[in-house]
Amino acid sequence: MRFGSAARPFSTLLDRLPSQCAVCHAWPSRPVCDACVARFAPQMPRCVTCAVPVPAGVPRCGECVRHPPPLDACVAACAYVWPWPSHIGAFKFQGQAGWAAPFATLMRSAPWVEPAIEQCDLLMPMPLSPARLRDRGFNQALELARRLSPGKTDPGLLLRTLDTPAQSGLTRAERLRNLRGAFAVEPLRAAEVQGRRIVLVDDVMTSGASLFAAAQVLRNAGAVHLTGLVLARTDPPG
Image (tube, rainbow, N blue to C red; front, side, top):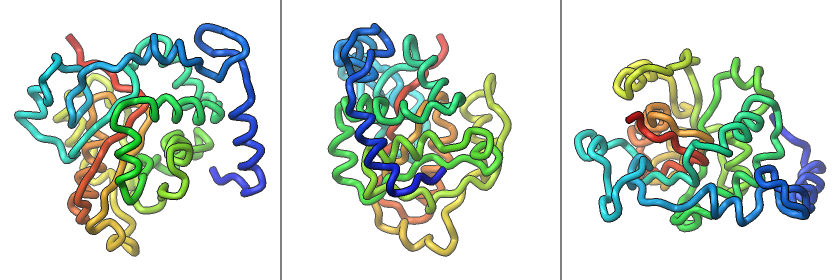
């Protein structure tokens, strides 16, 4: 969804007004207060290329050692556990686009996010298919990217060319197979990817299959460095 230029300053002003914390209900507060961010989004050791939790001192999980993903780095702001799923669901499925600002702030609080944004050439939101975009009214990844770095955000270079069905219950390898051909670089702008450092932005990372499939397309198009930046990461089963 495109917003008129006149609407942005008012929207930005509203983001800065004090409100009640959506988690602990403290007042006055930002939409999520600092205490709740510290309590419910604690930093922990995570795999540098897929962001799953790992023991302290271990840089990569076993899966990424065996099958290195096309990402050079991956950062998650929080785990996909209470209280975040309900608020992410409201943002994603109930049209509550106002969550973009506090969630972007939460993402910026994670280590390595600021350097990744500063060092990249482009922020690319994970694209939605036209059908899903119509259903939701906006792309939540695009709204996050715009709040993180509006000047570097480009929603037109990476395209979703295949609307895949829900993939719950499938393994990562099965999800990757289903996602073959699901993403493409805009053919008339393919040269803009070559030699670029790119940050891929998404809201929730489950198996990583979608993010990896998109990253592989950008890698094949000549991107020299790819970072995945997600709001929340689900923990692997078991």
